[in-house]
Image (cartoon, rainbow, N blue to C red; front, side):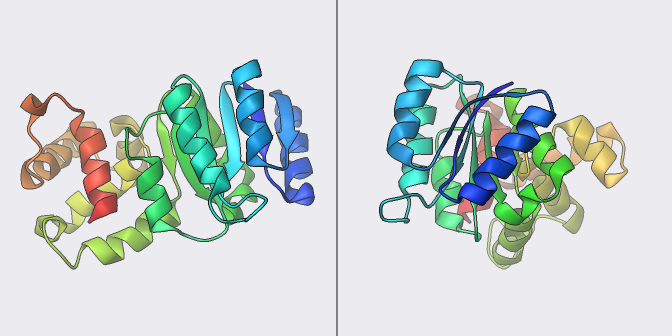
Length: 214
């Protein structure tokens, strides 16, 4: 795949470039700021952008704002956001429109090469990749309040795997249950969250957003 990197840490940026090239991917640009990132995306139209949330000059949310703008202006470009810490508000903002071709990973996850590369592949294929630790902490918060408190432990586990961006088949493999069991649990989740198929929106995306916002 064709990738553009935006990371102000030279060490991490160069490490990612080397990793991606060794895996056979094409790194179109490796940048240290978000302003240049938008220009490069417009000119080169990569398959995926990997961007740090906190970028110069203020090191607050420049990378996130660039990621949101890329998703709005170039919907065919996948976006993988990296963060040093779990920032729930940023995760929700990134997924506000839909949960396709998007990912949110903690930087520690990058060191686990196979998981990082798997996240890129899932995003490139049109899916999502949300860091399991982000999902785990959100589970702790959301199980204390309605409507997610209505879910059974198995339903919460299946919803957590869905929030990570896994397909039904991948959830079945991950949890060692049948595909029909996954479908049954997801249908129960949709019902308990009052997500009607007649709404015109993807119930999978709405369930993930409800999960993150709760």
